[in-house]
Length: 405
Ligand code: FES
Ligand SMILES: [Fe+2]
Image (cartoon, rainbow, N blue to C red; front, side, top):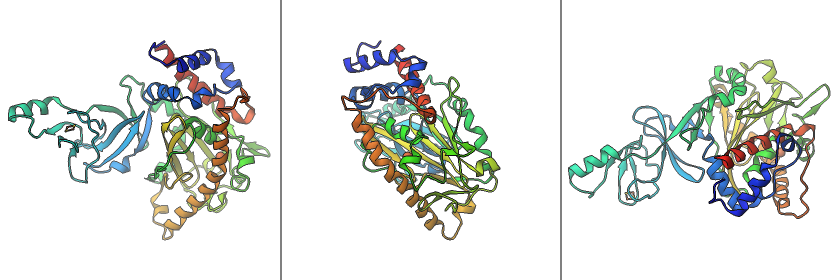
C-alpha cells in the first residue's frame, strides 16, 4: 500500500479489503467513502484519473479551431478540434511556468494569459515572446508540447483518460451497442447540457446511486414517474449482468404506453420529444437507464437519449448538467429539432425533469447527511436494488486495484 496515503484513507481501504463479492451485494460501503476529504482526493487520483470520463460531445468541437474547457480528476483540460481535423484533449497547464490556458476566441490560437506563449490546437508551441533569439524559440517550438491526453470517441461522446495505460473504452460499453442503431439511423445530434453553476451538496456517489436506484421511483416520484414503473403486472424492471470489465450499469423499465416520454409533469404518454420511428418496438415501449461510472448517466427513451455529465469538485460538492438538473443534454433527430414549437417542447421536458429532480433533491440531502450519523446502518439491498450492488462491486474493484497498485 502507498505509504503516503493518509491514515483515514488507509483505514477505509483496510475495511474495504474485507468486502468480498458477497459483502458488496449485502451492504453499503463505509460512510467515510462519502464524507472524508482525504478519501475524495484518493478517488480523484485513483478512480477519476484512471477511468474514462465523458467530457462532452463532438458537436462542441465541430470545426477546426473549436475548443472547450473542462476538468478531469481536478486537472484543467482543453478539448479541441486540431489542425489535423481530429479531436484532441490537452492539459491546459502552460509549459512555461504553469498558468492555466483558456480556450481562445474562435479562429485564434491557444494563448497563455501570463506571458502570451501560444500553442496550436494540437498543443504544439508556436510562439514564446522575448524568450531569446530565433534559434532559441525554434528549439522551444521543436520540443514544447502541451501534454496530450488519451481520447476515445463513442457514438459522438468524447471520453478522456488521464491514464496512458488504460484499457480501451469501447469494449467496456458493449452491452449498450444494440440500443444505438435506431437512434443513429434517425441521425441524432446533441444539445449539450448546461452544467450546474453551484455544486450539488452531496458526494458524487450519492448522485449516481440516486439515478440508478429502481426501488425509489414508486415512492419518491409519485405522480411523475408512475408512467415508467419498476413494477408492472406481468412486467417490470430488467437488470443486466455485469461481466468483468463492463463499465455500464444498466436497467430498463416498461412504459405504460409505447412511444411515451418526458412531458411537463414527468414521464407520460404525450412525450414532448416525439418517439423516433426507427427505434424497434422494444425500445418504443421501455426506458433504459445506463450509469457509466464514475462520471456519466444516460436515459435511452423513445424520443431522445438524455445524458448527464457529473464532475465532482469536493467530497460533498458535485457539478452536474442535464435536463433534470439544469437544461439540455439531449440527442435528438433533425425532425424533432425542426419542429416549429421545438423551444416549447424543450421547456416542457425541462419542466418535467425539474419536477422529478425536485423530488430527488431532499432525499439526496438526507442520504448525504445520514453518512455522518453514528446510527447509520450497514444497509441491505432488496431485489429492486441490483444496480446498487453492481455499483458497489465496480467501486470495490476500483478501490482494491488502487490499493494494490
Ligand atoms: S506561464 Fe504561460 S507564458 Fe508564462
Ligand atoms: Fe429519483
